[in-house]
Length: 145
Image 1 (tube, helix red, strand yellow):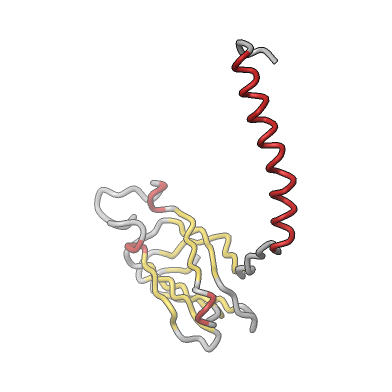
Image 2 (cartoon, rainbow, N blue to C red):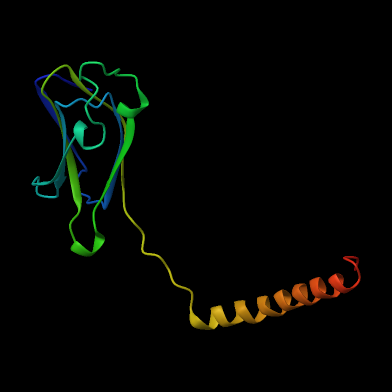
């Protein structure tokens, strides 16, 4: 929690990440999350209004409403080469409530080798034909095989 009128910075300790996820509680209009790069420059600024309009502090809103208490995930495009180096939380009033901050990297998706795919399909196709043939034969016998 970051008290009103204050800010706090969470650094990744020199390791860069592709994404970050956190539980943002009571998303108010005066709460600001800044996603920082490895040098401490702001990559993205997110406010409570970005995902929970009109904000938990708006007249008629209820701060316990699930609409204002959500997991927020921000992911960079790994092709840009940018990495997340930290977060800055700021609250202009009562507080910025948060929990479960998690940084992550996106692993490249592996693609099966063409030879492996060939073996997979060669093995699977006859089974599919066999099931189709069995189904067709069952039709001719009134559904009993």
